Image (cartoon, rainbow, N blue to C red; front, top):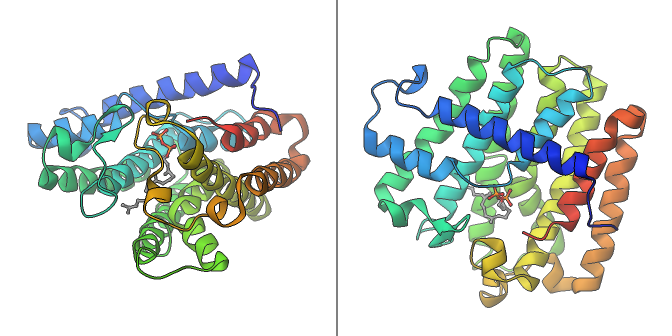
Length: 303
Ligand code: GRG
């Protein structure tokens, strides 16, 4: 498995990050229609949690999945920004003392450190709710697509998806999970939002049910790879590279697949997942090249 990427891929990733940053900056401004009149302190905390950092991988997956079906309309960036709002909310809440208790995120103080705990909770809540408003008001998309996206996002971010996975993760601190339970927890905690990212690209382009299902499966496979790579980095990388604490899972004796099976097993499994993801894109031929590279990027990432 290679971990070097074409200049075209790096350029596209950087261009998406810039487009999403700008959409978020606009969506989180005090004059944004959905936020008019919000308290300045809450606006500052939301901006601290959402702007100026992050790989913006989930938005990238949405926009590149959409691009398989033609040129994405302007509303696609709004959906991608909405998804990033949910991701940022999850990081803000995950960093709280009641959850993972982290002081540093994306190389900067976490929101509860820069502000306070109550403000961080409200900033997370506000990013989560804003996301649904952004999807609903993405005017360039068909009403049917917007409705499907709201419903899918509700499921994938909520108790049957990311939040439910986080619950299972918290319970794992006292219950010992077997391999199947670890896989289920991870598929929900990190996998659901990544699967949404990919399926959303097909939905917003009004693609067929078959195409939606294929993109969903692709997202599930790279979601698994994302989590395995994250667990591997927790074991092997340092905090400066990661921009957050490293080695936390190991220190807490938390069961991860690398902890159960070792580093070589993890690297082999990552390689198999990349092959499976690439295979799922075969009907798209050359149009799938960027997403194939994204799968390799996710499995081989170093931060
Ligand atoms: C609090 C409801 C709730 C859910 C939290 C996603 C999550 C669930 C917690 C994050 C904990 C964590 C570090 C999980 C590992 C995978 C992950 C989401 C890493 C961070 O995502 P990246 O690498 O981060 O895409 P950037 O900063 O690039 O956006």
